[in-house]
Length: 195
Image (cartoon, rainbow, N blue to C red; front, top):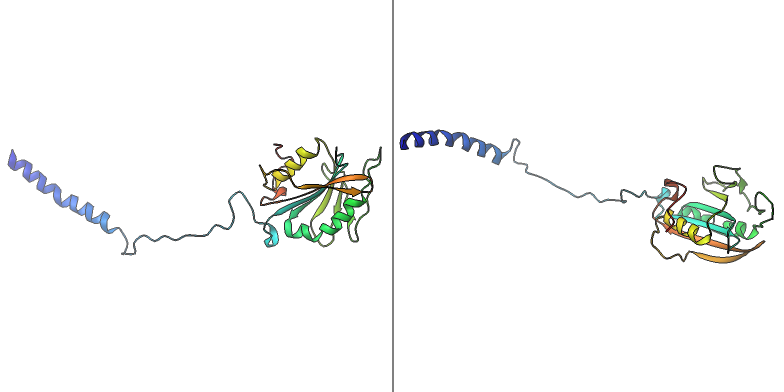
């Protein structure tokens, strides 16, 4: 019995050695395993702003400041919005809320044009030489929840709301909103979370 066991064991050794030799050498030359790192330019859930901008911005005005009935909102890549900031402030200062009117009265900066009603917006304003626009929307829900919603739209979730200041407009006090973040507010649903 000892001899037959030794004989069968000696017959198995060459096939086992062949399998071990195959797996230790691989099936190609001796290139080995190579690895390298590729830098990630943006998080998978974010998109880089067009034109190389580093973020997105919402510039807005709410009227009246204490209990808004109307929003004026300019949204886009931060670098592009900055080009229109001075004219947006002129527009914001000219707004006049009239009782019973279907739209506030306002003066357009030079080169700006009315774009008409669109979706939930009572009016849109086209900016010269740009795809950006100002939307004019009847508001609901108060100033703070809407400022928080706008902050969430650009990715400022959980940040204390210090993005506002009051200013003088033709019809009294307005609330100016200015918030910047990494997220494209146009990339998602119109209504964000209110926290």
